[in-house]
Length: 319
Length: 294
Image 1 (cartoon, rainbow over the protein chains, first blue to last red):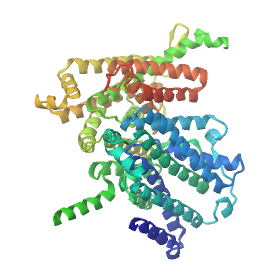
Image 2 (image 1 turned 30 degrees about the vertical axis):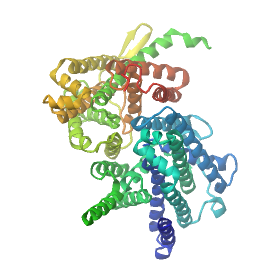
Image 3 (image 1 turned 90 degrees about the vertical axis):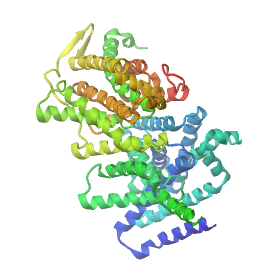
Image 4 (image 1 turned 120 degrees about the vertical axis):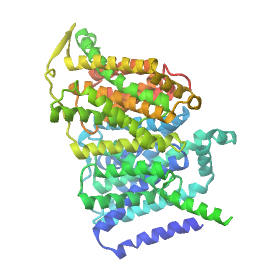
């Protein structure tokens, strides 16, 4: 219960943030950090709890984004309903990819490669079919109103992403202590032992990728509402896959708060560099890549791992 | 079926063009498969390293007037040292006993390389012009550009050199020993970490050679590697991870498939064909057609 209380406290504190600052820059920073954190949380479900490292999470991001925008443009569906479709669609894509790759026992590097290939196929398809607008992309017309999920100020989007993050936190916290979550972690730690203990690894990993894909799809839909534009490179390019993975790894895999922590650190870093050097193309990704290398080299358990090590040291020194 | 589909005057040039590209693919894949076979890691930074090598050739040509083929003796050792240092300083220290960590570190390296290139060279696509750029060679009904013919020959010769290096030299013997049984090799007095770094260096040196043959017939931009890396993975998986003949045949095959696929399906759908082959092979034949069962 304490864990859920912490999530409530987090929601209250961040919800009160606009009382402390009315600067658009601060609100925007918080919004983008939460957005990146949500991607990291999505990736963390599959990799941190399930041990399956995907290099192509942009597949789910892109499906979420395209369903969100096409539902509004072509089918005239309200965005608040469309986002549910977007989440469902990315969950279905997760089920498809998961069913194929886990049925044939792809693990480790092979799984990473196959997810990357799926994202790449989706990118090329999005370039060549009509419904996505091809390389030109799709634009969401500006119609500011809360009913349209287009808010007048960033504040509205901040509360929207905060709401989504809180749901994701609750889900992750629930997963961590649930039966499915325990199975998932058992499969991660030793698939053969888990199977011998009566766990069905295929079904367990499948639920992991469906949940993970659904969360990632939600961030794609959010992206479309905020930036009102999407094209195949944004949707299925490597950027979102990398952002999701780096946030989760930097923060700490398999923890509830790690991905948010990682996203916060990364966004602070990239903001500082932007202030120092101005906005150069690619500089953000240089930072992300370097941080990824350094963390894997020196802190393979992420920033959250430091806390764990300190705790372990403390416990050892007392025993 | 339209009659032109069987028109040899279209099909033959397409196959020949595919073979020339395929030879370059094979050379790139050989480096990748060598690294996989010995270190049992997937070098995700392979494409980005090729991109760096291409920029190296480009800079030597535009800033110092060195022709791409004369750049071979600079690029091959240069890429070798880069590979040796990367493995020894970064990759070797980051596995912590888990394959995923290597994958992540090489991914991180590739992100850094690609975006540094973006910082320095912008996203523009660059080509170079040499005295041979417009020259063509007539083969039957086909006219193939001379740089492509040279690339084909160069890639085959480099592959042969690589093969001889592994098959006939003491270094090659040490590399094969480490790939089969690293603890045994260590007991025999082989410095395993050194052999790992040498292997990684040789894998990247192959990219240096590939870049010199590739640039006169191709182009370079910061993203150019990501296309090659997936194709190289496809070839390596198709040919069997760690298999030399597999990589060579796989490379030529993929080159031809891409070329013919592009002819009949259009360029972008032709590429989808490659990724679908990749996914299908991963799902159904993850050990490829030449590789040993793991």
